[in-house]
Amino acid sequence: MSRINILLLIGLIVLVTLSLKSALYTVSEVEQVIITQFGEPVGNPIVDAGLNVKIPFIQEVNAIDKRVLEWDGDPSEMPTKDKLYISVDLFARWRITDPLQYFLRLRDERSAQSRLDDILGSETRNAVAKHELIEIIRTSKEREPLQTDILNDIDSDLSIGLLVPIHKGRKLVEQEIFTAASEKVKVFGIELLDIRFKRINYNAIVRPKIYERMISERRQIAERFLSEGNGEAARIRGDRVRDLDKIQSEAYQQVEEIRGKADAKATAIYALAYNQSPQAVSLYEFTRTIQSYSTVISENTTLVLSMNNDLFKFLGGIQAFNQNSDDAMKSQIGTKR
Image (cartoon, rainbow, N blue to C red; front, side):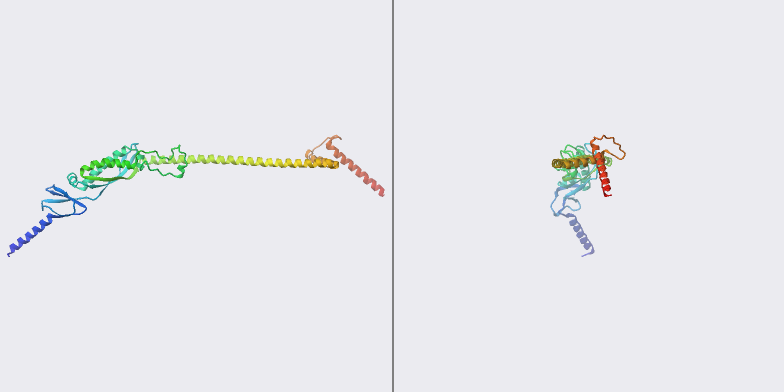
């Protein structure tokens, strides 16, 4: 065999190899394939995994992911129905269900992500603008918010620290965005699986106002409990004074009762003594009269009394007793001499 024939054979083998390599392709379990010829789709999408054949050098393989894909939007500021600006961060999950339609309209995932940015961002803005802030913050109207024991002690007729009732909640707002966006992305061969609010923050301008409102509510609660504490303290002090007066009154009553019983008993004893012995009565009168002197007569007191005065009669009796005692002593001394 000549050298030329050998070169031709080698070239033929290389050509056949390249043709086979260009004609054969594999589809994995996570892919679906669109075959294009001169840029236009040919035939039906290939969604089953395995080895397939195409026209070499003319047709091209365009692989499209058939797994669940993620979309994570950038945080954007938007107003609520009550004119409060918030920053909303949303994420979603989606997949390609119609690869041919997807390829004709979007071609690749980058274009799909850009279109999802537009659609989901627009629907999120519309939904947030139709609801008040509390509807987006609260999960659902069935969920009861947790409260501290301090707030539970507040009377039910006060609105301090209590959340206003809602009609929908964040779950239904997410469902509204999901329903509206699903219809719009379906024309691109995309199925929207789920969306969720990832983060909701107050705008930098609104945040100080929210904090001031929270501080004001807590200050009202503190002032309410402070006033109740002062009222309770005043009540306790009043009860203490009342109880003290009651104790003193009862003690004074007991003292007077004891004193009255003692006086009555003493009077009974005096009466009994008077009935039994006139001398004892005279002694009683004498001792009581002597005790009265210390009461009516002070150090610089001068009294002018008649001889018949009851206060003076015992003094006169003492003087006569002293005179008789002196005379008796003198007589005894004379007798001894």
